[in-house]
Image (cartoon, rainbow, N blue to C red; front, side, top):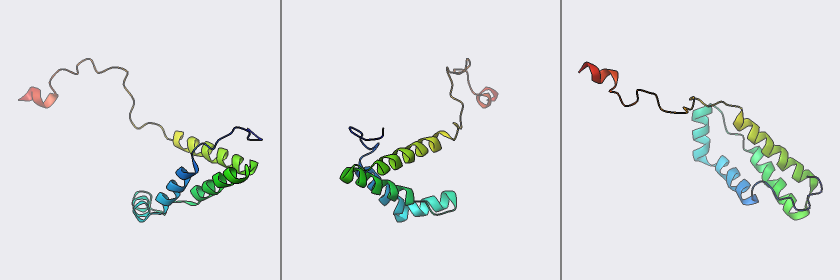
Length: 105
């Protein structure tokens, strides 16, 4: 990965800019504060945007490493939380029977 001959950023720079602007928007700020009780951390999106632009302009190895580490951390953070519901492999055997409250009527 070092050297960056044919390497491309994981996302286009426009995507980092859009994420940074969304993160800074009033609507996102209110939603994030309501859900998490704290302001959203938008600094990483700004750093990623700066790194992406540095890569486009100068093919900077530091920018390439920064983007790779940031995306890797983002993927690991998303995988950290297990699914809330256990996924079924097939429907229950009695799925077609009436529900218990319907049996009483």
